Image (cartoon, helix red, strand yellow):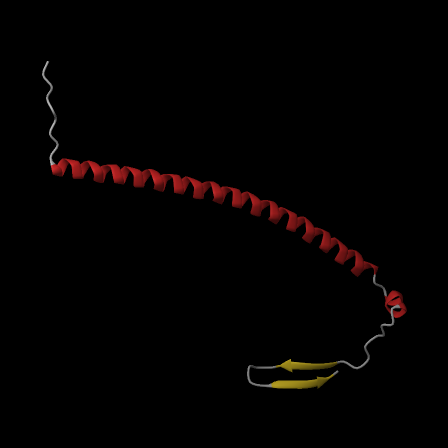
Length: 104
């Protein structure tokens, strides 16, 4: 039985290692991109949960505001020590260059 040894030239060996390195680089890049995609999806779900919670809080605050606004009457304001405004002063801008002082 005779064995024949395969002779690989230097150019073929160099080409093999270049292809192997590119394959490893491609596999590593693929793994990193999959990881980034998974992290982005998790981050998006977390943000959507936070947006929902903030929306609920905003609705609650709006309801509290309307409740307190509707509960404020003239008699309640006077009980709190507030008085009606009698002398109102306005500063108006008629154009971009001047201001006017008006007593009403």
